[in-house]
Structure formats: C-alpha cells, structure tokens
Length: 340
Image 1: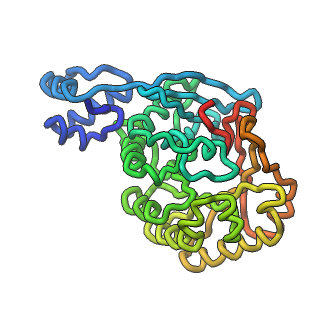
Image 2: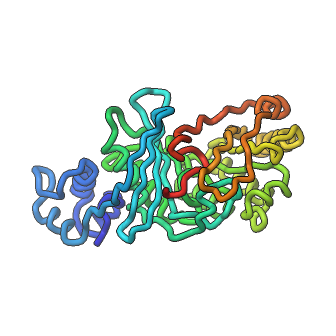
C-alpha cells in the first residue's frame, strides 16, 4: 500500500489516476488528520481510488521526554519492525515556531568518534514516510504554534539515504501537505560528494550543512572515518559546486573537543579554508561552533568539552556563532541520539 503521508499531489494523481486538483485536496485531508473521503471538491470515485491503493501507516511513540533545562523535547519512535530512532523538537527564537531534528536512518555506518549514533552501527534506512511522520508526530503534539523548519541532523547520514530524504523534502515543502519553506530545511552531512551535488540538483532551495569538525586533514580522519574515503578537499569541492548551483551559503559545523581540534592552529586552518571557499564561490560559509555533549552510555568517553572556545574564535578571526544544543539532560543534544 502507498503511504499517503509521503506522497505529493503529482505522485498521487499519477498513481491513482485522478485529477491533480483532487489529489491536492486529498493530500490536504491526510495532513489534517482526516480520513480520505468524498467532499464537495473530491469525487467519491477519486476518494475510493485512493483508499484502494493507499494507507496512512503510523509510528509508535515509545517515549516523549521533555528537557528540564529548556523547551527541547525528545521523541523515541519505533517502526513497524520495532526498529527505534529519535526525533527532537527544537524551539526557535519566535516563541510559536519550532524546528524538528529528524533522523534519516536507524543508527549510522559512518562511525564518527564523538557521536553516540555512530557507536550503534547502521541497522537500516528509514522510508520516506517514516521521515515525514516524525514531523507529523511533533506537530500533532505542539502545545501551540507551528513547525517552521526541519533539520536532517538526527540519527544517520541523510545523503546515504538520499532518495527517501528527497521524497520527504518534497512533502515537507508541498503547500497542501506540511507547507514548510524549503529555505527552512537543512540537510547536514559528514561529507558524501556525490550526494551533495545531487541535493543541489534536486532540492536547490534546501540548505546544506557540512560537518567539518577538524580542518586539518589527519585530525579529521582520526575523528571521522569517512574522511579516509572522501578527503576534505574533495568534499569542499562538492560543497562549492552546491553553493554555485544554489546561491546558498553552506553551514560548516565544528564540535570543539578539548586537546583534539581546539588549538589556534585548528582555528587558523579553518579560517584559511573558509576564506578560500568565499573567494572561489562568492559565498561565505556560516561557521557553527558546537560544544561537545557527552553520552552517558558511550562505553568510556575519551572526549571532553573544550574550554578554549573564546581563544579558538579569536584565532579564527571570522564571524561564527555558537549553536545552542539543548536537551542534554535527556540526551537530545547534538551527538547524543542513540535510541535510548
């Protein structure tokens, strides 16, 4: 059966053999939580055709855990096969707007050394409807306001499941579905060059986030095994192609680890990369500095939060911002998601 919450009107019209206008009305019914039914603008035969081929599957909400530190909320979800993954509700500056940090995989194969998800290994990819349903679940439980944005920075590497991610993005930005502005959607990657270029081609208004974490090549390899297959130079070339094709500045993320990647030399190396990128593309990367969040069940955490952020930013000498990574008391912060 076709998961109706993960289809666009164009897809539904082509699959069910109905008119596009009716398909839009039916998609709107689905995302309002209504049954697919005949109305003044949907013929009975059209509703019956859709019901014959489609359904609205659901995820189990195993736990909904609000942080006691801030308005972040973590959701532990399970698919039909029992596989567990997480999503996080993120408050934005406007008190009635929220973003949803979604997962794209159950676990992750990339094994970044400081990430709890990476310690799980990869269990499977999420289907497009499972990605969409994360946002629908968060939206349905909002006390007020609306979902303003989506960030693919939960469990998994989005570009390793790009077809499903692109399907989900199409539904997120569809006015008759979730109606989220594409510019409020960010896809974050550890660095898969082909996926970066494909994202630019198929979702040119969606923003790109690149997890750099170390600008010096050998240090990055020690933290992020993907760098052995795709060196940072290769990844940045794809990132530059994305910037040229879309006109959007990428976000570069750095998690500062004490004594690992927080030296002045690390900062100056990052500044050199950012300056060259700006010259080559006409777009200045937005540098996002993240404080390290320890995982309570990491099996012997060898990392510690850096106390050199101010010195690092001074050596960087470029505009940067500190990302507020909330919900650390419920393991909802950056690097902590592990389906607990």
